Image (cartoon, rainbow, N blue to C red; front, side, top):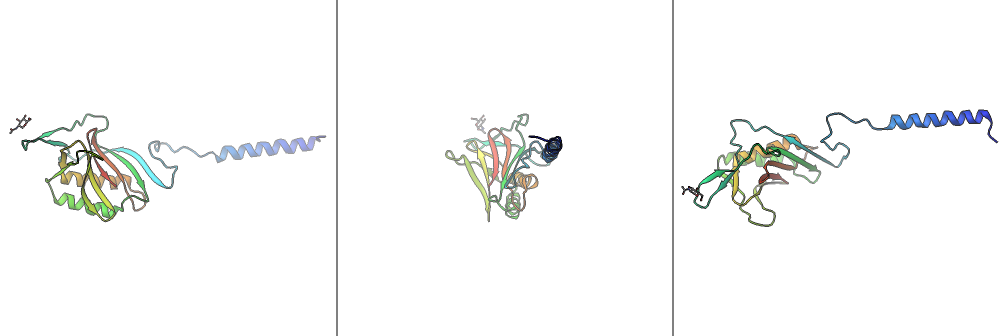
Length: 179
Ligand SMILES: *[C@@H]1O[C@H](CO)[C@@H](O)[C@H](O)[C@H]1NC(C)=O
């Protein structure tokens, strides 16, 4: 048989437990909807980047007769995005930055995608743990200093601990990847 005092204790306990439950629900942090902050093992997110006006941010297609045409479509929704995917298996940031520096030293030399099949990626620079590659359509390219700049953007927005990894997306046909 249930005594009134037992009932009272039971009601109080239930109320207490419900209150604890409500307080324990994690609060959503506004403005972090595109960042996966729930995992401690990696960092993901997509960020729009505005290339500086002094940079040649075009993507080109090298034609067989040795001329180049601009193929960038900067009005594309996915133009100039950094897509981060950083884990503790990603390259170390200092290796990426050294790779970026070496690419920038190459200046206007062509960092060209010469792989007709498979991954459709060509590694343009390799330093320690870091590979910097261009991926996309065959014989498309960016100037190497532009690729270096793109690698720096991946470090700037994708850094997690001492690592960074991800893609710089110029458009649907061409991207850089740091892996
Ligand atoms: C190179 O080829 C493209 C496409 O075939 C053509 O439009 C262009 O005029 C050519 N340029 C030269 C210098 O021959």
